View (tube, one colour):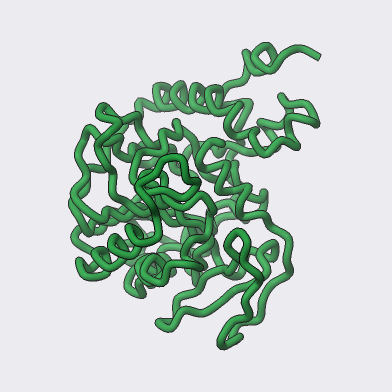
Length: 316
């Protein structure tokens, strides 16, 4: 068997992607434009929505204070002030984080653009850039999810351009879509089984995305928000966490990922926040599974490893 670099040498965006089948698009994506709300039209056109001064200052401050209590300023610790929590669902151990991620006006907008109630299942809490190079989120997910998935970038404070801001290509969600099975045709069974496959294939995926950006004449935009601004992006949008010019400068943000609660039979425990928003529960490391206080939602069947998705998104 040849080495990975040799096998991936001829991979390109066309060989790693396919058009999204119409039947896999959300009902909103298939509606006539005249029937869409203004936000839904923007979602259709751009694949990204920016909400200015959206998150309340008191909720942001409460989360920042709780985060500093939870996370030591000690880089030798797995959970630390700079990198955040090392596991994917810290909203189960930090009420202030959960309240922010499930802020009802936000989850109402997520439901509006997807057409179904969205459930939180992943929170990236580092205060430095992920430096995850260009990609689409879809290829990191189970094959059936497609665009019933989105993510949110919440600015907790003003973000400096040197801190490694979020970058994206508006409208790229309408391009062909990277698919895991297409990438896996270049990998050995052992490489496919490795939880590190998103990391060791990242350079080729990014190169393919960069070539596709050039082919389409796409414009790379930076999100340089002020505190309280929010960016919502489509699962097919080409994006990255850029490299910081100043690695010591903090990028105080919270990144959350959501899926339709009706499309994740691979997640086992769907719970209800007091404001009516929904989230998938996974125990923190070393924690026993805690029963819900009010088991109001019928859980789907179990199976998915949210930790694996967390590692994929961080490129680990």
